[in-house]
Length: 548
Image (cartoon, helix red, strand yellow):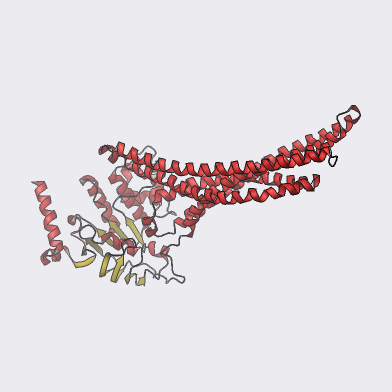
C-alpha cells in the first residue's frame, strides 16, 4: 500500500495519468481482498490452535493429577488446583487464541514494513534502527515484572475460588452460626488482595505501553523531519517520503501493539508456570519397574509385619508403631479403638496410598511395594464412612465399581444392597441424575449406593470404614443387611465405633495411639478386661441408659 501511494503521488493526479492511477487503485482493491481472506484464515487457524492447546493442557494436567499420591493433596488445596485447571488455562487460551493472533499479524507487518523502509530509504531506516534497542530493553525488563505480578495475581484469584468453594459448600453451617458477616469480610479481603496485585500489574503494563509508544513515535518524528529536509534538498521525491510516512506508521503501530502483546504473553507465562509446577510434581507412590505378579485366583490374605508409619505431614508422631497381625482368607476382622488410634491408616496402607516407614504389608503373600498398583487395588473394595456419590446418574455411580458390567449386573448389585426399591421410585429410575455429591438422596440411600458399587466390584478384600456410623436406625438395619450379603466369602476388615455391630467378627483388633494393644474374639476381649472391655462397658451402659 505505501508503494502504491508513492506511485500515485509521483505520477501526479492529472487527467493524462488517469489510466495509471486507475491501475494503482485497482491493485489496492486486490490487496484489500487478499488482506480480508488472509485475516479470516489467520483468525480461524490461530484460534483453533488456541482451543486445541488448552484442551491438551487440561487433559495432560488432569491425567497427571490422577497419578499423584494423597500426600500431595494434603499440602495443596484441591480447590486451588481446580483454579489452575480453569482460570489459568482460560488465560492461556485467550493469549494463544487471540493475543498470539494479533502478535502474528503485527510481527509480519513490522518485518515487512522494516524491509520496505530499507528499500525506500536506507539512510532514514538506519536512523530508526538506532532507536530500536532503546525500545526493546524496557519491553524485556518490564515484561519480566509483568510475568511475576501475573503469577501472583493468579495465586490470589485461586484463593478467591478456594474460599468461595469452601463457604458455599458449608453454607448451612455458616448460616446456622450466623457467620455471614465474617465470611463476607473474609471474601472481601481475598478479593481486595487480588485487586491490589492486579492493580500493580496493570500499572507496570501501562508504563511499558506508554514508554514504547513515546520512543517509537519520537523516532518517527525525528525520521520524518530528516526526510522532509531531504525532499527540500531534492534528494528524495515527495512520493517516497509519503510512502515512508505510511510505512513508518505501520511499523510504529505494529511495534506498539507488540509491546501490549508482550505484556499479555508474560501474564500468560505466569499462569503457565503454575500449571508447569503441577506437571513437574512426581508421585510418591508408583508401581515398581518389574512388579511381582499376585497369585491367581485371589485369596484375600493380609499380613502386617512390624509396620511403623509416619504421615509425611506429621513426621514427629507415628500413626502406627510396630503393628503385626494376619487376616486369613475369608475372615471378618474388626478394628476398634479411640479416634486417632490409626484405624483408617490401616486401610490406606493396604491399598498403598502411602508406603510404610518400616516393616512390610503382604497381600496374598506379595509385598504391596512389589505389586503393580492397579492389580493390588483391584483386589479391594472400599465402603467409606460417607458414601461418595459423583455428579452423575445412579446407574453410572454403581457402574463405577466395574465399568464393563451389564445393566442386569448393576441392578443385581443394587438389589443386593437393598437400593433397588428407592432407585425405582426416582423420576427416571436408575438413570436419574443424582446432583452434585448425590444431594437428591438421603444419607442411607447414598450409603446403600456405595455398597452396591462395592458389590459390583466383586473384590476378594472388603474394607468397611465405619460404613453405618452416620445412619439412623432404619437405614442402619438396611445397610447392615446389605453388608452381610456383601461380606459372604470375602476377607473383610471393619472399622467400627459401635461395638454391637462387630460381636460376630472372627477376630477384633484393638488399637490405641497407633499400637495394636489387644486382639481376640468379643468374648475373649471382654474377659481380658483391657481397653476393649472399657470401651464396651462405656458404650453398652450408655445404650442401656438411653433405653431407660
